[in-house]
Length: 320
Image (cartoon, rainbow, N blue to C red; front, top):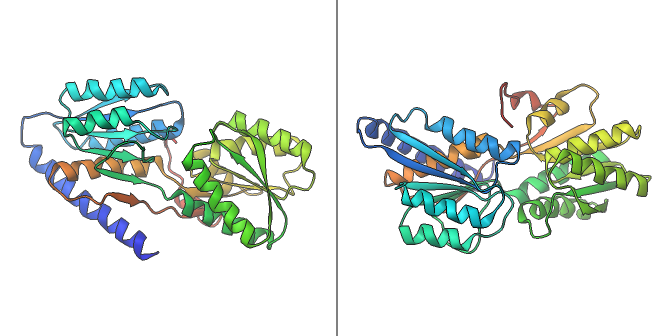
């Protein structure tokens, strides 16, 4: 573990302790504490899981009320949701920006209200924030890239399937990390020209197209697990499971089961736990409300999961 990661983990532990102490003290008060959770979208298991983790982590706090919103992918509605929550007197906000890059109007409204805001997963541009908790997507990509290079013994062709759109820095950071490692080892990378849309169906269609174009594929990297599960089906349908392995990012339940399954060609994923991020984001906000000086940015540990350790990360009943 690097010094940076150690410090990040230590910061979470300290702030979690502060939050729990605050919760115990505030539980004796009859005053209700409203916390807003602003979701750009609850379209996918990842974002649903993060929202659920915040709510579950709040349960021990008897007087904390979670007010959760879903903007259904509409930035204007996200801004309206923020304004509505501020009008309801929330003490703090947790914002999950999903697949957008900026929300200046929403951040301006929060800043004007003087309410602390913790961003989870994505750091939105166009305004200030109190604290951020999420993954180091470039580092995760580099870790997966190292895995692919090692498994290929430094030679071969790798297809890359992107989620999109073009300005999505979470996806590009992951792919950039992978391609940097492939380039260092002189391994060929071929990028699928379309977008997989972060879904299994999208990954399936992109993989079908690439299988028709490229006959000597050795491995596939997808910017998330869902697309790789779709790509895996396309590879299976083409009778190529024995000579093409796949790798991705997130640690989705279905991917973990596949990685652990004997004979599976799903080789690895980089952990980007929606549950971990949601819980850390809630504890970070509670610590801030307790008066703690929070780190501006905290990248959570993101180990590479393979067949050797997948069983450690499989959780029954996981929503993601």
